[in-house]
Image (cartoon, rainbow, N blue to C red):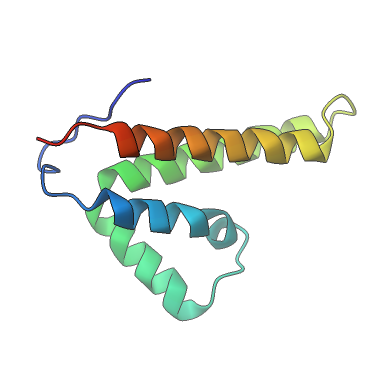
Length: 99
């Protein structure tokens, strides 16, 4: 698995990112309250890895929604794939060496 190399993130709070990740699907679905949306948006302004992840999640969701229209991919499988992507990204952040 590759590690994101983003300049200026030596002191970055990756635990905060993991907290944000757990809310991204709700954010994309429009299920967060206004305060939570603003908090997430503020974090995204400062955090390039989270912006990259959100873009990736949006692209994945769009692709899966398109594929979900095909009878071959059940909704449960789409959810499993999204969860696997999230877990993989979180594991990558946890194992990223400190600088």
